[in-house]
Amino acid sequence: MGVIGPRIAETELQNTKAVIMTTTSPSRIARPRSQAAFRHAQELIPGGVNSPARAFGAVGGMPVFIARAEGPYLYDIDGNRYLDFIGSWGPMILGHAHPRVVEAAIEAVRHGSSYGAPCERESELAELIIEAVPSIEMVRMVSSGTEAAMSTIRLARGYTGRNKIIKFAGCYHGHVDSLLVSAGSSALTLGVPNSPGVPLGCTADTIVLQYNDCHALAEVFAAQGDAIAGVMLEPVAGNMGLVRPTAEFLRELRRLTHHYGALLVYDEVMTGFRLAYGGAQELLGQTPDVTVLGKIVGGGYPVGAYGGRKDVMRKVMPAGPVFQAGTLSGNPVAMAAGCATLRELNEKRPYAYLDELTQQLVRGLADAATQAGIPHQINHVGSMWTLFFTDTPVVDLPTAQTSDTRRFSQFFWAMMDRGFYLPCSQFEAAFNCTAMTPDHIAQTIAAAREAFQEIARN
Ligand code: KE4
Image (cartoon, rainbow, N blue to C red; front, side):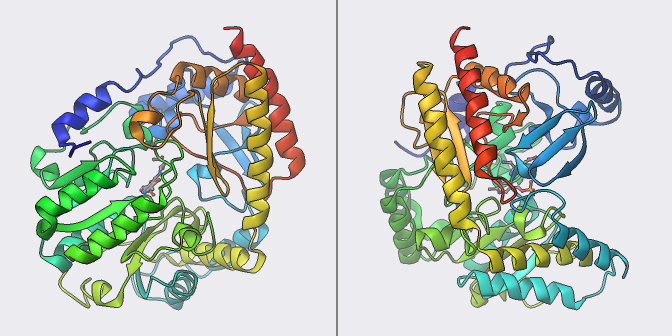
């Protein structure tokens, strides 16, 4: 597989299964209050949502509007309860409204919400991150994963004096102009390869390869190694659905970036503090040069972060010349919630428990799908998993795209109507949380058994 330039990527992504936009709801349950709320929101907010992933564009029908969330549950404004396998797309590993996080945020907000001046809570969270992730010697807080990824691209270019960046098809790093090429997540689902508004100049220095393609990686470095500032990847990909890296891919990434003087950047916005307390890099035994964080690190509040080798991070202003700034960066309330979340995770180390829940779920789902004669692949790592509707092993974006997205949508709604909230796109990961019990998983499997039988008849 050769290098995919932006134009070829467009062709490839046009093959992405059509977005299923139905006017009649595929759900069997009327949710009048959510429907009214959605129609009202659509008059005020583009698409009625503040992030496209929430619009249910990939599964048809209308999104449900949430009234509140507690523990493993979401409650919609029509009075329905759902076991939540999205967890706000990853942050809510402790479940919703965890008492320790709630208390920390309330206590913090009583001391003011934002100072525009440094406070010790920022150093508190920085210290927790540095203690948790050995490759991070220094860290900068920002307000989103996108901001952290964008800043890291600039830092890699500023540190190396080079321009080229390698990313991988199906990996999503936020809506960074230069990385919105063959992006995963909602960009992929909505078939938006290079979003309108992103001039080719922004992506001209972006090289897109297939995930796990060691040959193409070596080819590109042999041809352009001294022009490559950095390689950014999800060390365990979640934004094309879950895809594991091969050991050879990880080895080659580290060897080639080291040999050619490019920075190896692990985007752990989704996997950080999720797959292990030290993130995917701890689980995989890897050491990147820079790590991008988000989601869990803010405990459900707006926090992103990027950190790594001191000699690299000292290039960031005002220590160094690479500019980056943010009004609400290091927000004291968000810092408090992040600290409470990380302390809870560090003290309880729930990772083996979360993995057991996933193993129980995967066994049950596989058995139920097989019983129903439904082709399926279930990729999982720790508390992240994805059910693909294909009999092709899913190892990269093209194989992920062999999944029958129509069947995925049918399964999504069959589970939704039984009270189980799955990712509203085939190309997302699902997340278990510590508030879930084996009983919750057994209930999920029982519902899936019915759902598989139901869709097998369609
Ligand atoms: P945010 O800017 O959304 O905080 O982070 C962007 C980002 C960066 N890197 C990775 C690996 C990510 O998964 C994300 C965001 N993930 C999506 C869902 N896959 C967030 C959901 C959404 O866009 O609403």
